[in-house]
Length: 226
Image (cartoon, rainbow, N blue to C red; front, side, top):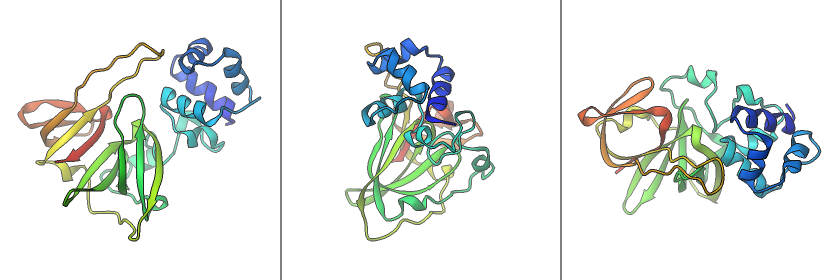
């Protein structure tokens, strides 16, 4: 698919008209029409805005080998092939030897200067130095906008023997998605983070906290051990 075809498809999937899309990005409708007709490409600033608004990575938008309807990208919605891996952790060799910054869409908090240690179908796993200890966490892939290398390090990361089960029975901070309104100035923002909770178990589509509360896995942006 061309850039214009993918932009139009993603906009339609999001239920936005060209007018609504243009207003959300503070641009003209004619600019949107030009992009969708492959008569131009947005600048970097607008590409970032489009990525956040439509919840799709910039790489996926620009890569003509990707289809919006069936994406297979490293840090977006997981492909069927990755889902077949179950709890298996796959390496991320393109980020070996670097500290990275992971940005999330909307009002969701990313992480900075972390080492990426692997991924599964739903999450990207990382470690970071915090005071005198190494802290492990995971980020929901559906909310990742970009992963950027920030600093080269001497030792390369290795895929750890880790999965979601690593966080069971541990005290963690658990963050859920904060939604940003479609039009600028209209926001749906609630702080539903769990600052110190214990995960009892992971199910296929949700997780259970101690005392019985459940959370949809697709709504989780970050889990990090305390």
